[in-house]
Image (cartoon, rainbow, N blue to C red; front, side, top):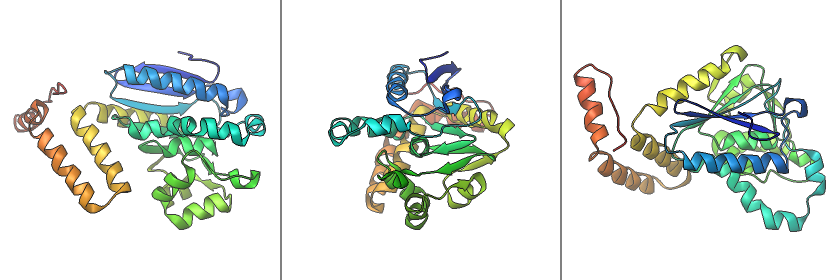
Length: 260
C-alpha cells in the first residue's frame, strides 16, 4: 500500500514492510520522505501485533541518499531546530523492541547508509554499493553516521569511509562488518522475510530484552551489561512463555507463545 509519494507500508502476517518507493527519483531522502517515515513509525508504534520490520526498496537502487536540493536549502537555524527530530527518525529502529532488518540492493549512499545503520541486521544483495560522501559536500554525517558506523566497523574503517569518501561493494561491506548477510539479488527479500518471520515467532519478551541488552552492551561497561542481564533474566524466568518454550521442546512440539 502506497503511504505517500516516497514510501509504501504493508503488513505480511506479523511483519511490517517499509518500501522506499520512488524509484524514478532514486529513492532520494528529503523533507517529504522523512515526514512519511515519521507517519509510518507512528503506525508501527500503534500496532502491537507486529513482530518485526523489513525495510527494502523498489527500483534498481535502495537509495542514492539525501536530495541535494533539500541540502542546498538548509541553514544552521534549520539544523538547530530540526536535527534532533531527524536523528530520532533513524534512532527509532534501535529503540523499537522488535527486530528491524534492512534489505539493500544497488546504491546505498549517504543518508540511506545512516538509515540502515540504525537497523538491527543488514542484508545486502551482491550488487549493493555503499558510500557516505557528506565530507565532499562540506559537512560530516549528522544522522548517526559517525557514531553508529564507528561502533559497527571500528574507528579506522569509519575514518576511511567517511573522511576518504570511499565507495565499497557488498563483499567488502561484509568483510568489514557493515552488513551481516550477503545474498544474490533474487534472494534478497525472501531472505529478509525468512529471518524476520523466524524472530517474530520467538517470545516477545526474550526478543525485546535480547535487543536491548546487546544495544546496552555496545554502549556501556561490562558491569552495566551484566546488571541488565540479571534484571531481564529475573523477569523472563517468571513468564509463561519460558515455561511453554521449555515444555514444547521436551515434548517435541511447536510452542505456542502468548507474550506473557
